[in-house]
Image 1 (tube, helix red, strand yellow):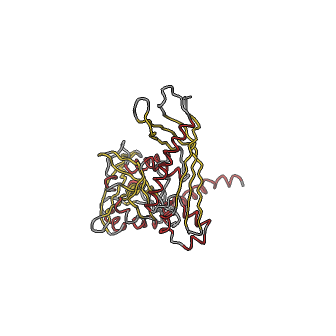
Image 2: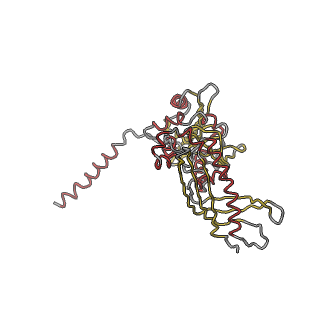
Image 3: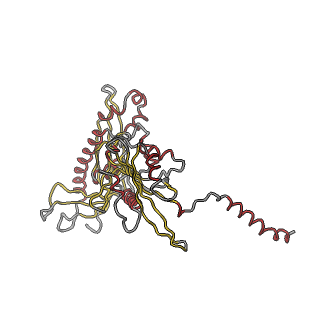
Length: 378
């Protein structure tokens, strides 16, 4: 009996193998596909859209090796499917656009609302929901047309830039999937990274754009304010670096700057309602636990941690107040005050129009700095 089993075992394995291989009858060879890894969308004066794609084209060198080329194609149309059909006729092979690393939207188009432009991607059965969405200062197509960086496809480099900015708490960890959840939630608004070109072949992400629903308000926060906004929102990634000019000069007469890194935070958001006046008040307290990286004010290299903490708190409180004014002006509920109000004051939430009520909210902040380390200094 055992001999019979051993005799037929190879045949059984071959049969199973053939069944598994036969399931790939419709396989498309990778070299026949043109993989779109970057997409940009811009507004046209005639009301149409201009779409630009960067596609990776693989050319076989034999022996299982390939040359990678980055090819650009551009078309205009009334919607994304029309643009896609036109671009499909410009590139050889089968177009695969469901694995795009980044989608970049021009700021003028974003001011009209980004969801109509992104709606097509959510309908794709195999949509890549980890795609990063950015807003371009100016023309988004110019961002994708930047030359290759170190022979990498430019869309891949942009994605790495975004991920680096996320790790340093400059921009939120936002994807196509999380963006949909935020934009469809009337109790919270979003912010997105802003990307711009500073010369012929250099890109930079150094600010964030404030949104009211899916509409870009045109109001942006600088690098330092973007970091502070995320910290006030309780979102600390790996680390956050802040460079704070003090309201005094060093012994050399130069502006005194303290550079420190935030490694831990505590954040508390409170929302209260004055029932008599129907006024909504919100208070945010943030405790920053930080290490001093650079501070050369004192010639003997000694630091008075308590005094320095107070100075930093005064400056950061002023910045925080400025940020809250910008949020209220933009009607951007980035802190999710509406969500807190909805949970704790449901009856009031159901009786008001939050978008018209939010700019009237009395929003106050309180920043506390705890210096936990001064490095090798005393």
